[in-house]
Image (cartoon, rainbow, N blue to C red; front, side):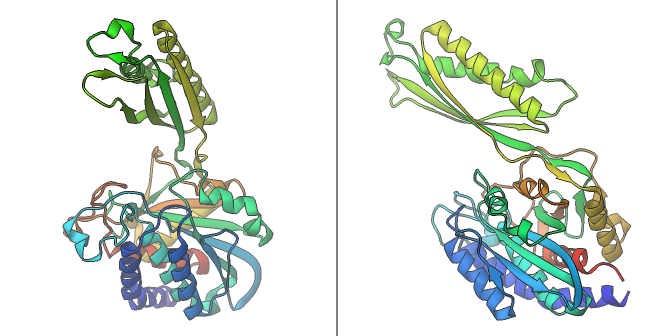
Length: 396
């Protein structure tokens, strides 16, 4: 219990640092694979702490914190550092709005990075309780394929370091600070993407019989694609098909030559994803062929399914309950269909991912991920930081 008391006291000591750091990062967002200034900032903070680091990728870095207890054990804690290519809104965070046009931290990665830097500070003061090594993974490119997690795993760096387990978190606006949620097994879906071009024949709006209207064909495809999940996928399998962009045309009286359609497929198994990809192209082929048009179809594999291992999930749940009581940790019954490239690490190491509450009315932080008004309640750090530290130092 003494360690618990010390851990919570240290958290309160470093929460102002995490809040300040998050506001700085929020004002200086950088999109995936362009996190150069963000990386410089992280490295400068690690330098101040005296924590050495390596840079396996062009952006991001990995801090190496060595505990006082001799051990071969290596635990990795991961935070993603990239922002989204979007404009933000919201009065609650107006004082630290993005200063970089076209980029915004509207998914919480600024909080993830600040939290891990705060965890590093806490762990430095608890080095005597740490056995082995802690790898502080500041990962780029979570928001864009192929995923920074994939690229980092492909370097073999973490494998060479002998990582025994890896943990990651995400802010969760649907829960208030002080609550976490996770589950054993599939936690998050596999987000695949598709890109389609429907090629018709342009013409005058008043003479449609002389044209092949790709907008009409595209509309037929969008409607037909929505029948795949309801009529081709086993009802006991989770799947989502969403059209995110429909682009075509230049004027009210011109039938265009082509339209472009972008969408995403979310599943919990490769087999279901393969089925949906096959059906999407079959529908597209039938609709275009029937009208004398043609098409191009590109299906891009996204991140694997986030699948939590038993021991690491138990460590998260028991650590949260140890720190904040039984009601603080929720075991989810079902996965969610959002994707996360944390899944790539789990292909190499035992690991678990969890959601930490970050939403409350007082901070106007209950907007869903990627909403322009997305915000994070500062109290998030009071619970997320000690939990991540506890995953390393254990419970005494």
